[in-house]
Length: 185
Picture 1 (cartoon, rainbow, N blue to C red):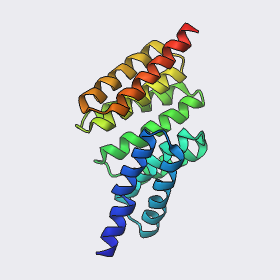
Picture 2: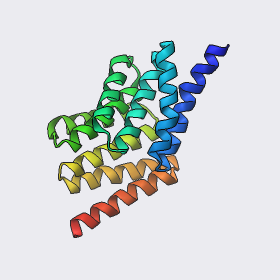
Picture 3: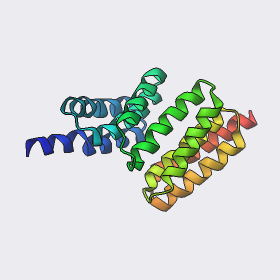
């Protein structure tokens, strides 16, 4: 049916396209892919996919430095996420953790990042585990805890290697190199 196709194009397909652009380092393109899906899903009241699309859109917006908007999208995702939707629960927590981290709010930043990692580890979706661990690494780095950030990033690289994700490995290693440069500088 037409509505099923609309949901597919604006839900799962928008998510895949959004992640692909984020992994390629183009948060602006990811935002465009996800925003179209977000609007349509909102209009038709399709909340099962909206929860995840909103959270990933929050990540794309966060990567462009728009913290208030990222936080708002995490709130939208949280408000419509089903209790058993691990993917959305991990993603909105990760976005909100990083927003708190950028704002120097250590306690909620670390708590949410560690919750995201724990939730991601309940499933076998390796991309989600990688993302949660990279989030924890970024949060710990923002909080000035470089050696712990390095541990989290190394764990993320190990997950990416298990998945065979070249981009995930490269992203994790680049983070570790920046971390080493900061501590050496």
